[in-house]
Image 1 (cartoon, rainbow, N blue to C red):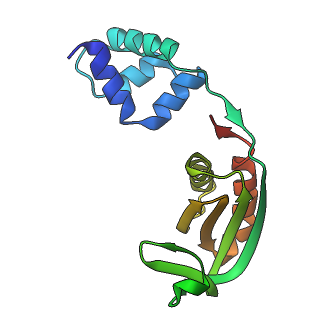
Image 2 (cartoon, rainbow, N blue to C red):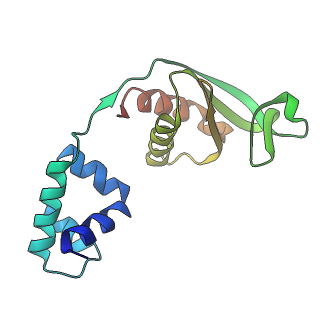
Length: 160
């Protein structure tokens, strides 16, 4: 396998590097040292530069959504009364958590962006799901306001 192919494979193991390459904000030499690729740092950095030239530019789009918060949610026994079901666990009214609900232009990339934003804000997510123009993220009750702000901000800049 060529050094360029090894470099691309190593970058694929770290999606944040792909985003940085697309955005043009990556320090190629530092990334070359970070990656576990057998080769000279300068050659790996060159492979990264060439790879970046082939990637589409980093662009974002704002999603049209309505974000609301519902306090007092948690696991429920009857899935018919649930906001959503994940892995056999139904989440609905009755609990000590808060659900952040987004309705509108939501999909898996929007959810990924929201989860990353919540991680940056150090808001732990208990459960999350997306489907049919609805997204739900469940957080600790006391993190509700911070989570709403993070979700709204994230949905203003979802990568294309």
